[in-house]
Image 1 (tube, rainbow, N blue to C red):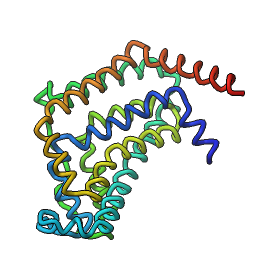
Image 2: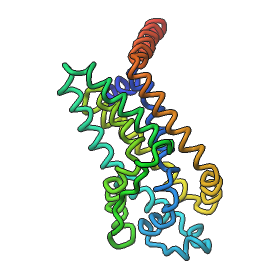
Image 3: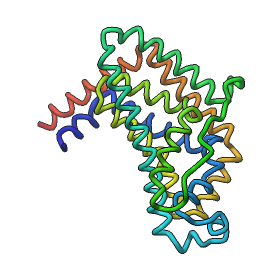
Image 4: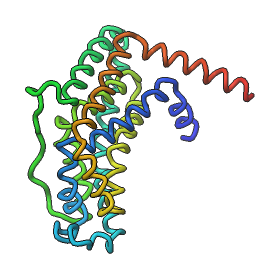
Length: 253
């Protein structure tokens, strides 16, 4: 297991893709269809009422807040890892059409970046599951799973970027790993909110006041990745990085 993790994490393509996946997850959290509902989802996942969260009770129930938010994150991480695995498997299956599909996916990724940045208003849709199961820690993973399924169209641009990169990896394990990193980026703010809810609200308030710029920055990142794939510069960067890794490992030996 340790050898697999070392070889996976040190892959040239993954070393480029991992920070993209992590940032994409963070940007997804701060999107207009996720961040406004943070109190509601924490309430469902922890079993604490909205009034409890508002009047400071959350600060005295940090263990429950942490566990509820962690179970919630694990729930939607399962969805994204499954999608990443499927995307990686698809890449391995369609490897002979790799060049054509890379161009197609790169163009799609550029379009998704434009959508995420808010520059294609007609595609600004909000699709999600509105009915949730009962509240409490026992239902937190289920709520997280439904979050992952129901919000997939809403966070589609950033998730689509990660699935594109997972496809590019052409293996199930690496696709799952990359999707897991995306889930980590999306999940960290939820867990931080569980541990320090009131302080997190202050940070959330600042981001919401500057949300347009956050979304544009995320969209530009997706467009940049799409252009790198489209022009072949992504593969060149991967090759350069892999050569550097080999040289460094040889030097150490």
